[in-house]
Image (cartoon, rainbow, N blue to C red):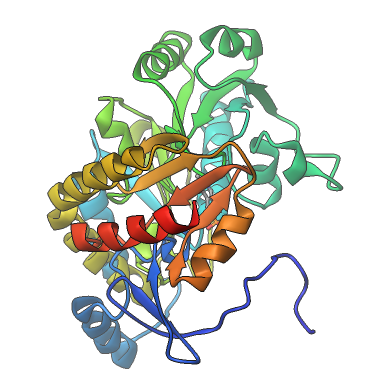
Length: 375
Ligand SMILES: *Cc1c(COP(=O)(O)O)cnc(C)c1O
């Protein structure tokens, strides 16, 4: 009644969670392969996460970025130690904000170099968020509908079509931004050869190579950052979703030389990287590092089981998987819900599986048996 209708909500109210399961008001149990859309990396009621959050809440929830923040420093050190080179971090509260920060940093980097370049090449079916910059970077008409004029400065190319990237290139192009696996776009994977060609182009033309790892990052694909599968060396990456294990936090990492373009006053965030969010993220990062082999193993197991179903094309890496059906899949989501399984349908025909990263083979078996009944 009082909520804006920005979501078509499923008729279920969850009251608690435990591990990879959610429970509704009536005490019904659901196996969760959505995880708050790739957010609840450690599932529900994770003892280490709860303990750390509890302890921090009693000490300090928020101060301000006007003061030193050792929680941010520690978390940034950890994130950078997992990056391919020295970098600096900016903390915010969401994926869209992380991408806004990246778009602003790209522009300011060239401004500080005295080069008049500001345009960014992005890709069809991408998703970068709902704020004006991030939405304009998102090359999907349905997301732009009713919001024109968009922010100027984005040129769209086709994923895995290098000639379309060359075609989008202009004298004032400053960077290329992409998801190595498009999430909302239907678990579409960029291929390694294409990614390396784009990276090479960036290096040769002096453009910034920006990866939106909001969904693919933090272990989701079986590597801590998804670019590691391809041995890429991005200049900037953005993170959010899984990073806080459910507590809102986003981050942008940039190579030191690029990061220098932000100076006091260039950018900011009131809530970004507060002690509570950083405490939560620190536990998530530590746990996910440990979970990586398991994510890879269970992901592979899950992928094979999906293939064995023999319906549609199976896509994705680690625990970011898609099953592309020949028809609309939103009805399937409802049927699964009735059988105690939470799944998501994206890009019309793709069932998307982004479960908590703690999921085990036995949960996959349970999910597959329900999927077999409804498909
Ligand atoms: C979800 C998502 C975003 C937007 O994140 P919000 O936290 O909803 O703003 C941006 N990029 C990618 C790749 C995403 O999956």
